Image (tube, rainbow over all chains, first blue to last red; front, side, top):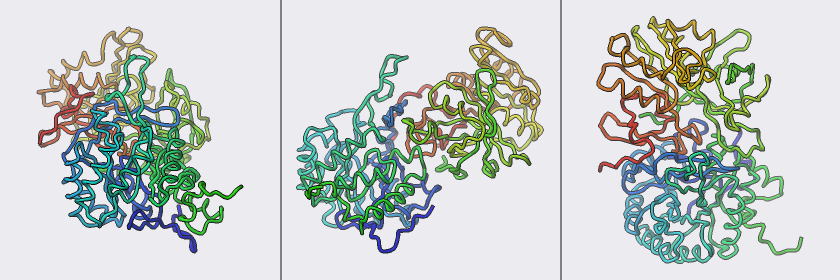
Length: 317
Length: 282
């Protein structure tokens, strides 16, 4: 598989002040910390590794069953299982840096203070390109804790993280599509200091096992991902890009091919994360990256950036 | 605790044969040099349904055995039950079909360095990987006894050629339609007491594995079991297939059955906590 970037074509992208040679990233929670995918391709060949959202303390996550396949998608109910920020920063980030991967660290907290603590710890570590603040994980015990469903709570989290981080590291706020007015929540977190937005997290769903006649997942509800949610992602990216055309968007949601990545870019994404597709195809990131580049060139774009938001152009067809 | 499946490769394999054996399908795949990395207990993750399928996740199958032949090169045998739509698709693949596989994945059964008395216990078509294991154990001079159980005779998988690689084979069915009537776990207590078993290797439903772990508790008998838990990726990135397992430090962690399993030490798996979340010890 050839993943070298064609000459005279600018495939690079930026999120805030962070530069990436390719716009194709892993999606947080779908690549662990990169080691498992690195046996299939070198991690420095993709735009960046967005690590699994990490919390302050080690965490077991939710009980099994944690997974249910659905038509063109799947529900997951992991519940942020992870090693905790200290072990993560001590073991996983240095390894990624050694692999010459671009690293975006994703953090998740239960309180505004926890996010601030996490940001303080991340700030002290070298080799990180950006910070994703996941305020939209649907797999928490208390739905009231999904900050991204509450405009005021979203702003408080981002504001707290921005104060700690200062101006050095771009902050990407990861938002949920499960809200009535996504552009207003997006505007709120940008005002509070987010440099970019990650759209979309999984969509809250449920599967009932018709044999046991009870919810199938141990956590009852789960996050829907995969091609089934791609139109929701395209809509969310389109709406937010329309409202905030200067804010870079890291798009994600059911991307399984270069064509899908191109669709999100047309809607307004400056970068595209590949998540669930890696479960079915460990080479998905490389395949999608190659396909996307070919599509952009064949459509006559001279750079990735010139295609971002192209679906919004006002000239008559 | 391991971190990745080091030997795993993502390739297209050719279906060399697909024949029905009772309620199961015995599928032979041409996989080339990949067989060199396969060990008894490893599994394969297969993309099902073709490119336009609405099934987006791979299906995991235990590798029943591998061989290297002069005519076909490296071959891998799987036993599949056409129950769900993914396994039905696989069982319908004709000779010559190309299928997308990732293998070998997961841990393997530990092979003793000196000859021991091994008891292999299989439930349903969980017996599939035990025949490949039996061959390896026999070649190391082990005594290999096998117990197979199922609810009914049609669900027993015991191919003729497999019987040659064991010293004895006993079959148990709950409805008495094949072998002795009863559960496969019933004779194990006496076998342990008589001191005629050093290691138990098991593969089958979680209830069976858990029951065997109870029987070996407090004895010197080692119990290596191949667990099954719903998996989305098979390569360690989705975190769905976890089980509560006690580590050498006494702490219980949620380990991935695709990376730290499927073969685990039955004494370490916290069977009573499966389906729950252990408390984090700070």
